[in-house]
Image (cartoon, rainbow, N blue to C red; front, side):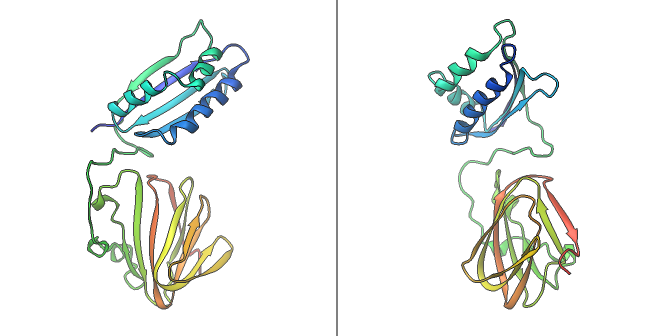
Length: 234
């Protein structure tokens, strides 16, 4: 399957750009649960306030076609149509996604089973072998939208850097052991079976307790979204 994308430019009746943007944002809320919809972003023209643009990314053409069929009777579509400038019909450009920052590849069909300890330990390559192990099995699992990591930290050892994300939130689950997390200016204690959500723009780093710390990390894939801060928790 090949992802498909399109860029659609809508022009509102004079002075109705805000109402049009609101109507399209309401439609976007419904897209969150639409099968195959990977991205549906609404933007408004900075210099053209009556112009609203929708950027779409779909898992494949079949999902896009099915979504279009389902929109025929949607009330939000009729609201959008009523706000459009009749002299300027929507302009649509069909695109073939090639890649780049933020591009979400289509996930493969079927299932993938992987024992996490079989994923490559990347810690030595980052000069972190003395801290523990760091496995990032996202690619080996064939995940298209979800990122996964497994961190195993030795007793008393701490990540030599902090990191944060501009958009993505992450979930950290303690599989074994205990430890601490520094979250901006706060330090919290972690124990087995604790689950810690860390939102965007929160800088975080972790430290193993007396028995060490094993963390499973899950979050959305956002290529290029991370920032590493060496020596942040010193």
